Structure formats: structure tokens, C-alpha cells
Amino acid sequence: MFISLVLLFITCLSLAFLEERLVDKDKKLLYAIMGVVMILIAGLRIPGATPDSDVYESMYYSKATLLVEPSFTLLSDLFLSMSLGVNALFITYAAISVPLRLNAISKLSSFPLLTLSIYISHYYMLHDVVEMRCAVASALFLLAVYYKLERRIAYSLLCILMGTLFHYSALVGLVIFAISNKPLKTWHYYALHFIIPIGIVFYFFDFDISQYVPAEIGGEKLQRYRELKENGMEGDMEGIPFFRDPAIMLNLILYYGCLFYHELLTDKYKYFPIFIKLLGLAFICKFTLGSLSSVVASRLFEYFDIVSIFLWTAAVYAFNPLDIGKYIISTASTIRFFFSSLIYVLGLGVNN
Image (cartoon, rainbow, N blue to C red; front, side, top):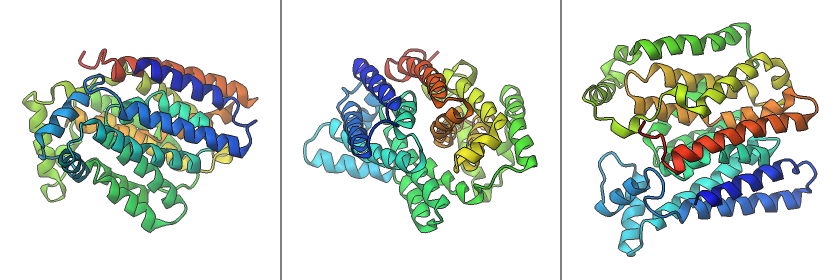
């Protein structure tokens, strides 16, 4: 599987340097072929070959329903009634998430193949290959953002609600209706700068702001997460500290780079303002919710951080000529691919 991922990434990255020279017909064909390959790699993997896949297999055959989303229960019951193995579940989730993702990328990116290579370098492995339910939810979230920006609010709301059928955390996506795509105001600019240093203080001093959330609006459920962590029951789900995660560290560089060039990027990429705000929100979740639950903090961070694939793509406009930007962004993607492969595919460092 690792070799397949390497070939997939190298192929997509190579095509990204050619996409401006390709005619639309060939570009769409190559894009579709990449999608089919992504479905097959994620769907046909052997249970136990990647972190979480053996857990999914156990849940599948045990018919576990506690806190499992409706999509998992429905699909498991259907495939078990047909005497199908767990790979039927894998490939179905991939067949849903990958086309949705490709559709979202084609709508939101000026360089779809470059964005796809950036996605493959990290989030394809984290979501489609490991956290299958999150993969569908995050793909629907991106479509929800697009429809919200196009003022098709009913479609946007539907995408968020459908996402909850695959992962309950998708409900937090409703926050997009409170975030505009208007250019950054001066106070936005400075507030976004201070998110990281203030968040890191919260992270290292273990401040828990969630304890001030009233019980009527979710405080009781947050308390259950708090007790889970206090009793040491998060276990392997805690993941690794942010300062040891190359993907997060690279996104911190991206974040401040985008803020530095925010006027240029706003002019070149019309969706930049909302995506930089959502990336800031992702860091807020990561740094301020860890004291409540490392699992909750990571899940919400990953849910919002998915927009970084478009900011990485937009970052090429900060360089002249664009090819220099593509080389620099591709180098960052290659570094991210290497470490993500070790963590999410080979399973090295997950529990350290």
C-alpha cells in the first residue's frame, strides 16, 4: 500500500506542474483517473494495514452501535446481510468521500491538480485511508463552504447536516454561517496574529475554557469528555503533540505567510478571506480544547484545517514566476507526505 501511495503522490505532483498546459478534456480525464485510483487504494486496503482499520473491522463484525454514526450502522447491517467483508465498507466510504472531495476541489481551486497533490500529501492518508467517516464529513464541509459562498444556503446547510450522518462533529460546521468572505479588517488582521501565541499559552498551561460552557448548551457532554481524559481513558487516540507534528508546524508557517501576504492573496484568490479565518479557527480548537480532550481538539482541528489545502495552493501567488511557488509548495508537500506516511500509514510514532 505504501508503494501505491508514493506512486499516486508522485504522479499527481508531476501533473500539477503540467496542468496549465493541459487542455480541459485531458485535465478532467486525468483528474477522474486519479480519483478512481484513490478509491481503490483506500477501499481495498487490508484490515490492520493502517491505524484504525482493525478497529473498524472489529466494530463492523461486532455490530457495535454505541456512539457510532447512522451511516456506519446502516452500511454495516446492509453488507453483513449480504455476507460481505469489511472491505465493502471501506470502498463504499471511499466511493462517497473521494468524488465529493474532487468536486469540492474543482469548485474551490484555480489549480485542482496541485490542490489534489497537497491533499494526498496529508489528509488523504489521515482521512480516506484511516478516519473514513471523517473523510466524508470533511468533504461535505468543503462543499458546504462553497455553497455558502455562492449564497445557496439550503444546499450548504444540507451538506453540514448530511455530514453528521458520517461524523457527529460535522455539526460544528454550522459556524461557517457566522463567518464572512469579506477582506480582512485591521482588527481581524491583528486578532488572527494573536491566536497562535495566546493559544499556545492555553495549551501549555492546560487552561480549560470549556468548563465555562453552560450545561444547557452542551456543558454536560463536555464534562464527560473531561472525565474521560482525567481517568486516562483517551489512550492511543490522543495522538502526538502539535510541536512534534510536521503537518501542523508547516501549517503554522503557512498561516503567518498568508497573513503577511493577505492583501495580495485576497486580490488573487477570491476565497482567501474565509479560508484564513477558518484556519485560525482550527488553531483555536487545537490549542484551547486540548485540556478538555485531546481527541475533541484534534478532531475539530482536522475538520477546519482541511481548508489549508486551498491556502497552500493560493500561496503560489506570493511568488513570481508561479513555477517557483509551485516548487516551494511541492517541497513542503513532499515533507508532509513523508511524515504523514510514517504516522498514518506505517503507524510509526502514533503512540509515542
